[in-house]
Amino acid sequence: MNQQHDYASRRAWMVESQIRGRGIASPLVLTAMAQVPRERFVQPGDVDQAYDDGPLPIGCGQTISQPYMVALMAQALDLEGGEVVLDIGTGSGYAAAVLASIAARVFSIERIPELADAAGRRLAEQGYSNVVVRCGDGTLGWPEQAPFDGICVAAGAPAVPAQLQQQLRIGGHLVIPIGSMHTFQTLRRITRVSETEFHGQNLGDVRFVPLLGEQGWS
Image (tube, rainbow, N blue to C red; front, side, top):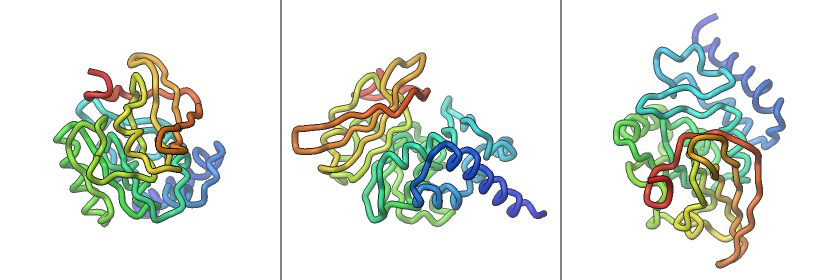
């Protein structure tokens, strides 16, 4: 068995056991998770663990999220294809690649220059031409590209950043962990139902690195 075939087999096993097996039902999310090569988004020494059921370090004190968590957050955005999505906390670029396999455009913000540069190159090399990565404060969003059909935040905040809420299109969803910097957070889905009204839904307990920035943790 060649290496690429081995990775494809592991990816298929991951989707069936970790993703579909835990209730992720969106065909678009399942297809994206089956297509994106996670082994290309982890550190070279961790490729054998690329499809394990957990996060992995990617340097600079950051992690690539557990595959199930990436799928859960992507499903919570309720994408159908053709949307414009904001991805906060690019990291290695894996979640951006999953989202870009569904949405028309993905704008991704990473606060650490080293990670932003590497992720931008990695995504371009793998043909994700519909992703734009920039370095900046993700808590402030990307106003010039708003409104967004979905916003996905891969870091835990003390409260929902007002800037991100205001950059949501009516009917759009914001998925973000809210809670303590040091223990578990609650994954929240915020839906904008009108210019001034937002509805929230709890999706369960999670644990993410802190969301640092002007409207996050200082």
